[in-house]
Image 1 (cartoon, rainbow, N blue to C red):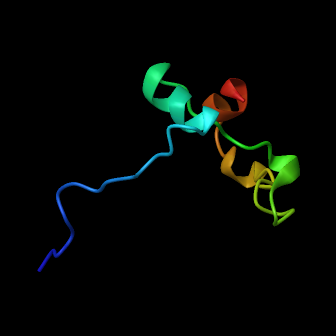
Image 2: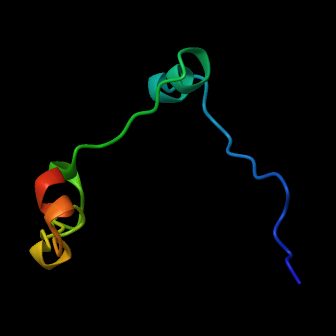
Length: 60
């Protein structure tokens, strides 16, 4: 039932510095959250309810 291809290609433009660095320096450009379109993309609130035992509290 799985119709997904085994290989997916991502074409890069050799004149783009970020694309070139990916191939030549193994560097990946990641945008800062401050320039995202959606201001809530990276604002994940802390859930202190998950600190439900002493070990987790101590680790936190």
